[in-house]
Structure formats: C-alpha cells, structure tokens
Length: 263
Ligand SMILES: Nc1ncnc2c1ncn2[C@@H]1O[C@H](COP(=O)(O)OP(=O)(O)OP(=O)(O)O)[C@@H](O)[C@H]1O
Image (tube, rainbow, N blue to C red; front, side):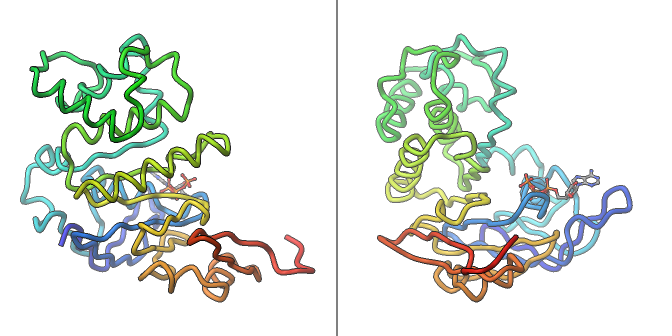
C-alpha cells in the first residue's frame, strides 16, 4: 500500500480544512483527484508529503507510520510537480532543459552537484520519453508554458519517485498544449512504474489511465472508487449540486449542464 489514510482530520487556525478522509492508494493504480477551488486537494497532498501533520486519524505512506520515518526519506520518493513550482525556478531561468531535468537528481532547484555520464544519459532518455529531446539546450526561460510543464515532470522523474503528483498540470495551457501534455502523461503511465496522482478541476483531463478517482468537496471525501463508477451523471450531479450530463467519447469524459438549468 503506497498511501493509507484513515479518518484523517486537519484543523488549522480553528478551521476544519480536512474532514474525516480515508483513502488508500495501492501500487499499480493511478488516481485522479477532482475538486472545486478550495476543496482541500492541495492540503491533502501536503499531508501525504508530510508538510502538515493530521490533527486526528492515522496516516501511513509507503507503509511507514507518520512521525516514525525521516521526512526527507519520504519526500525523496515523491515527485510533486506543481504549477506554482515554476515561480521557484525564477533564479534558474537560464538553465537549459537538460540542466533543469538533471537538477531533479539532487532534489534541489538548481544544479549544484556535478552529474556523471550515467545521469546525463538518464536525463536524455527521460527527455526522449517525454517528447522534449529538442529542448535539451534551450533555456528554460524561453520555453512555452506546456514545454516548461513537461520539463518539470522530467525533473521529477529523474529522482525515480515511487509516487508522482501532478498538481493541475494543464492550468494555463492552450488546447493543443494541453492535449500534448495529456499524451505525455498517458505514455509515461504506460512506460514507467511510478504511481501517478493527478489533481484537476476538469473531468476531461481524467484519462483512461486513471483507474481510480477521488472526489473531494469541502474538505471531505465526497466519494471515491473506480473512475467509471465515479464519473457518472448521477454522481457528478450530486457532487456539483447541479443537474449535469456526463458523456464519454473515445474514452474521454466531458460534461454539460442539463437543459434549462441556470447557474
Ligand atoms: N493555513 C490555513 N489556515 C486556514 N485555512 C486554510 C489554510 N490552508 C488552507 N486553508 C483553507 O483550506 C481550504 C482548502 O484549501 P486547498 O488549497 O487545499 O484547496 P484546493 O482544493 O487545493 O483549491 P484550489 O483548487 O483552488 O487550488 C481553503 O478554503 C483554504 O482557504
């Protein structure tokens, strides 16, 4: 079991942010986490990575009970690619795509240690796999947003994480860049053993590779389970508190408001 969360609550500044969440992620699964703004998605991931400590409940990540395992060791096995991470790259804008990816090996933002030939080969292989080999020598600053996102995913893969968290990777991307990024995620899931947790507001990003989906609402677990069972018109109408129709075409989901509904 990679993640085993039982009845976890989190209270911050007297506010209940996470309310009685239980969630189990097993090896071989890929999860999508769907929730509106403020649903608690980022907070839940902060708990998983040990940046918050639960106020109540039990948590195990990689089979280790919280508080009994060095956080540094835990975090080394988790790659968290967040859109906001781009801001932290500000000092390294002149680094090339290859350098940014290599920096993932040392879990630091810049490239302070000297990579060896094996590291360089590995970084190049990752770039090939993610379809970004042509960005090897291009400064990060000059890349499009979609390219930057793929480079950051490559950077996370360099440390060979057991768990890869993609936190709204498509936000800010145009239609084509988004589809390219989704393709990359799909291929990565097919080729690598890493378990992916994909956080999103949009159901059309929940690709067939996501075996399971967790629906978060107001800090609580609205429902969870196999994706096909979660993303039904009935369940999502309850979830959104609005009557909606879910459609599935070519194994991709879309939704529309039922006719005559105003929001
Ligand atoms: N330290 C804190 N003290 C009080 N409230 C907090 C704190 N951190 C987060 N919150 C609140 O907890 C709720 C959940 O926030 P969180 O960032 O986890 O949501 P999210 O689902 O990731 O949202 P988004 O999709 O907008 O990124 C929000 O209402 C937020 O204001």
